[in-house]
Image 1 (cartoon, rainbow, N blue to C red):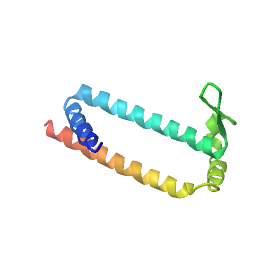
Image 2 (cartoon, rainbow, N blue to C red):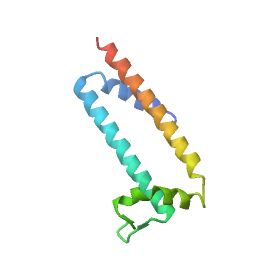
Image 3 (cartoon, rainbow, N blue to C red):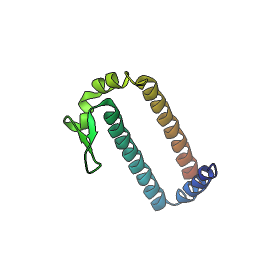
Image 4 (cartoon, helix red, strand yellow):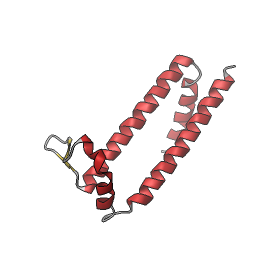
Length: 114
C-alpha cells in the first residue's frame, strides 16, 4: 500500500489551505499523537508485567498513575526480553523527524497563503 502516503500528503496539503480546516487538521493530528502515546504506554506496561488485560479487554494497571512512576522498573523488566533503550532512542528520533516535517509542511503552506 505505498500509494496511501502520497494520498494522505495531498489531502493534508488541501486541508491546510484554509485556517479553520488547518486548525481542525492540527487538532486531529495532536489527538492521534496523544492516543498513540497512550496505547504505546499501555502495551509497554503490559509486556513489562505491570499491567494485565482484564476480562473485558481493558488494561488494568497494577499501580497508580498508569505506572508512569515506575518507568525505571518497566525499562529493567523490558531489558530481559528486548532492547528498550534502542527502541526508546529510535522512537524519539522518529518523533523528532515527524515534528520537523510537520512544521516544515505547515510553515510552507502558511507562507503560500500570503
